[in-house]
Amino acid sequence: MKKIIMYAVLDEEQPFIDAWAREHDVEIKSVAERLTPETVGLAKGFDGINVQQTIPLDPSIYPTLKSFGIKQITARMVGFDFIDLKLARENGLTVTNVPAYSPRAIAEMGLTQALRLVRKLGYYDARMDQLDFRWSGLESTEIYNLTVGVIGAGHIGGATAQLYAALGAKVLAVDPVHHAELEPYLTYTDLATVLKESDIVTLHTPLNAETANMIDAAALKQMKKTAYLINMARGGLVVTADLIAALQNHEIAGAALDTLANEGQFFEKQAQPEEIPADYKTLRAMPNVLISPHSAFYTDTAMRNIVTMGLDDVLLILNGKRPNYPVVE
Image (cartoon, rainbow, N blue to C red):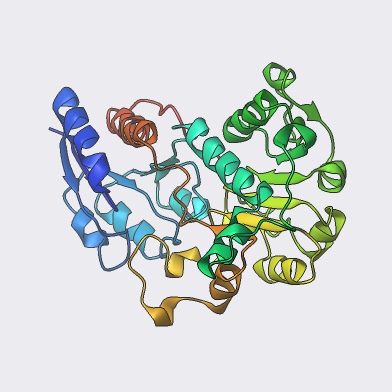
């Protein structure tokens, strides 16, 4: 019987794990801990490994897994930037991910947060906390009047475009690959046009050498002063200090962030006050900023697909077959 260990397992994942294990006659051990030098020893004696986390894997983990006879790492998530692909390759570890477990889940979260920003609900909350129930000065607009710019029109960006188009918005997109099936919902253009013309700029691109820090001071200055930035992708796409400065200087109208560049310090756990960085505190205090703890994916549909699609690939590799979703460097 094949044996697989899964790290950072959520309670909501366990029923799907148990069902998959019974169906495929595979032994699975679920642990709540992330994969770290302190916990990698738990993988000894197992044939395969399945992880979900955002903090980078320590370099020592790769040769350790190799010494255990493990030949793969499956990230049960879209992002795999926490894995050093070069070290994985050098240690004979095939890397896979789950590229589209539920694009709608993340697209809907982005739309939800954008609607909150457009309707100025953060400002209403701040006023109402002071028992001020007046609405003067907080007039908003409606989505069909707006232009939405999608940066990265893949699975999630494409679903995002369809949602906004259904509400009547004009949708622009920038992506190196043009998908003909999305043309009824968006118009492809360049990055400068997206930044300049969009009332909502929403990020759905992977984090890599080309996209890291793409939303910096220069990019933010190209946006409308009335525009909103939505980041449901990776924190490293945005230079946080530049975003804070742009918000404080009223260069953009607001932001919704499901992810932050330094989130590994405090997201996904009960944090202590000393762990909370100053930039988070600054952003959290702004009524025109919404922050969620990298939870846009968190739906029942996503939980099922994350588990089953990831484990399917682990088993394919263990059986000497090509995985469905290999990550290519």
